[in-house]
Image 1 (cartoon, rainbow, N blue to C red):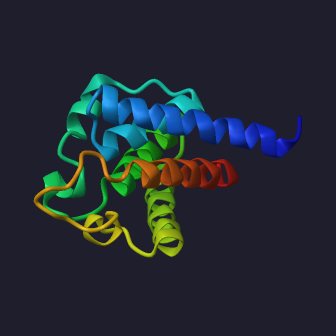
Image 2: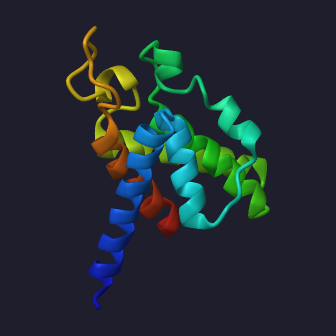
Length: 146
């Protein structure tokens, strides 16, 4: 088994988790990002964090900052504290994560990133594929950093 086989297995697992979060639980993108990263890094997330992320999908549908970015930032804070990082270091990592996300996906705005924009007759969970890609990106980025 090659290293790529292991990576492909992780990416397939991420895709399955994302699908279940969207279609089984009707979770939003921020909740899905936090949950997937927590599983990948073996971190338990308190239910209050998931409650706090309920409106973090483009600022409650306002089309603001992407919930995938917000979920990643929340996870970095939780993970950083668990790893005994200073608050200042966590803030710097969050800034660098946002920059890296924007460099890789061209924006951190839900309005810009949402596939095919926004329409009254949008199908549910149009960001499923993108979510898998951003969880994978975030996982790799954090592995290289931490």
